Amino acid sequence: MKIAFYAPMKPPDHAVPSGDRTMARLLVGALEHAGHEVELACRLRSRDPQGDPARQARLRDLGGRLAQGYLRRCRRSGWRPDLWFTYHLYYKAPDWVGPAVARALDIPYVAAEASVAHKRANGPWDASYRAVLAALEQAAAILPLNPKNAACLPHPDKHRALPPFLEIPGEPSDEERLAIDLARHGGPPALIAVGMMRDGAKLASYRLLSEALARLTPRQWTLDIVGYGPAEPEVRAAFAPFAERVRWHGVLSPDELLRRLRASDLFVWPAVEEAYGMAILEAMAAGLPVVAGDEGGVSALVADGETGLLANPRDSEDFAACVAQLLDDPELRTRYGRAARAKAKREHSLAAASTTLDAIVREAAAP
Image 1 (tube, rainbow, N blue to C red):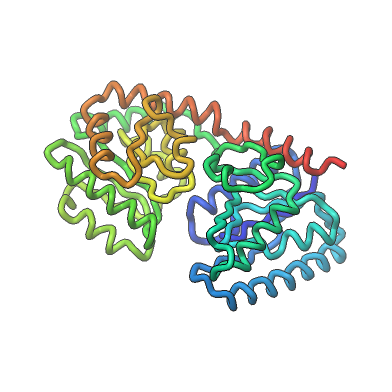
Image 2 (spheres, one colour):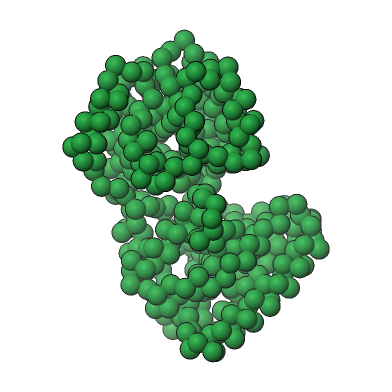
């Protein structure tokens, strides 16, 4: 099947890494793994962060022109998609392109990771909000990767379950295991946090993490921070009181990040306003136990008391207590880490997602 793919938040070939870009690439990979031919149909970033009706009108008009341009390219090239697949649309980043193309070509429209915020009706994002509703009305299938989003989505008869997923790494080599064991020998437990450094929820997560760890300074631990962004000065300031325990890594390649995760003892992330957390899933796949805030769809990844601990949302005291429990119990960390990797392999692998996606798009494309 030929599939036109679009991610209005951030295209999968964007230069700046993020969980959103990672998930877009994984969806393309899973569809290709199932044998489908996938084309990146559009790179328009439709996000309006400020709620500017004039900007939304311009984006709507631009989306219409891009849709017509795509249809002309299809006619010239002879490449005609059998299905349009859009990833991540919501009131700040609707799909102004896909529904028009799908109608013109009379092909099914599929939306993954959509959300609807009814409080945006008649407000500054009203046009974008209504565009999302119209797209979901047209959709042949709706895939809520974050299960907590499903409750706010219309047309439950169209919902198809697709858990977040990634390509599960293989086991470390004997040489890597030896290097990890030597690095850990005699040292304090190594915590690790991974996240972009930008204003809003990410900065709030870093600040909450620093508040929690400030309560644990009598204990022995170190913290590796992987990430970068415009809010890096504010993040560094938050950890300044115990800067001697913190190592900063900036951006790491996927292989470097995997090695860093495997060399750590515990993944920590407060997950403020987190949809589900690709970094959390990457940590689980690497065999790390997780302490995370119980927000969004995080509980669909972290099984509390089995693969890690879920702290009360935005509660630095409870988060600190969860971290302390695992700092004090290395056997529990080991057990949770093994269970985390097993859960990632069982429920969140690219192979499993490929099978699920294949069934969904074939059902959507059926007469």
